[in-house]
Length: 595
Image (cartoon, rainbow, N blue to C red):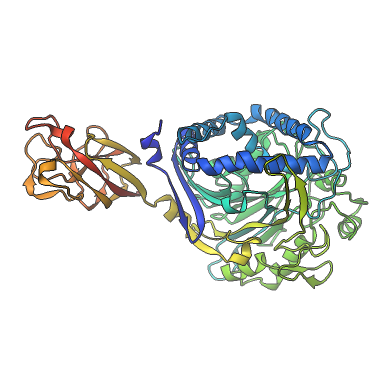
């Protein structure tokens, strides 16, 4: 059954063609809101996009679709025991919300969908994890036209000029599998415990590829394939949400990676914009390596090839490049010079677009001291390949993973065959979205309306405004004291505005808006004696002092609790039928500003 109080805290809207889901509450409540409001879209992910992923696994491994689906399910089962309780609860909420909205979904399907990108990463290189045999060198049955992933940079202090605040930028690259382009989405989460945050993902998926929180902490991910991988651990979605919900420092992020088991090889670019600190944390199932900026350097950048090689870019520690040699088919990593030469091999079909690392270095040097939002947008849209010294034409795809692979990515199509009714389809990798943020102020710019995303331009938002923006609620005329589901605390300010609809406390006197009937004064025993009959009233908690709202009112909050709303009428039937003859409903928006 639809839970109105839980849903009242959430909204699904579109702004400048950007889909935005706002969630608020406990893990279960946020999951329920997600599932209910996006139920039809989640069905597309489950019934269409998962089938496309199975087709991807089949093409990569040379298995039939049935075997590939079995492997996919084994991967999900291996990952499930490592799910933190809060996210298992959130996924249960997604499942319940979908089913209450009339879309039949099982929890196992939601769990499976949330391992989608971890398994995509594991099958993206010629050392893929086998669900029964573990890791081992096994050639891919098919070499994909393009398998490079994401890239990012952060800059601050003198690099950005002006006031020197930190800017953080990320391009997310992936396949345009069926159902995905139209379902790219911004999520804004306001948890009861933890930091409010935004992240990018797809319907039904609790996280994917990073974002930033209200504490000024940002994190982004890059596929960073390693020889030691497994599905017995936490993946991209889990680490994205763990960090954004609970972390505000680089040191705190590193603790999280060391605390929780990890599955596929991923590099996490993390930054604390308040203290101007950043790091790239390269992870595998067995190792965590941390690369900080070169001493005295106020920027950092990363793509998909490991850069944790002792003596390279100021790094000292475990040599993660050795662990990437096999999966990227690198011929020689015995020295920095040999490793760099191996990365540049134009015949290498597996190395994941290392030219972008070199290009970031060039662009950061070129624009040093003037890295503004406008410059950052140019950098994330850059199509120059320093290896070939050519600029990729706007709609010309790269030749391979190592020829004309650019920061703004566009790869050739691959052809897949899925189970009916999807059947045969084509898909290619390009930028799914591009995010540029000032985490400290909450300002960010998102490109998501084209593919590559940058071609559709950037839209500006502010995280703090999104977290504090209005929630819609419908107040029924015939129900006493309805819980809006909106919680407030002492020191907050709540603004309630009438947005539409009509109701009546007495059908004989006609329908009115939230101001009520100015010709009738409420008697003793009414919701608020002395105010207009039929007016909208409110209180905080179940026994708070009643106040008049009418068509609009901003209320300073002096106590904590949920906001309750009610029509001004005869509560105890002292003068007649009371609420039993009331009709209609009004809609209101509720905006809470934290103290």
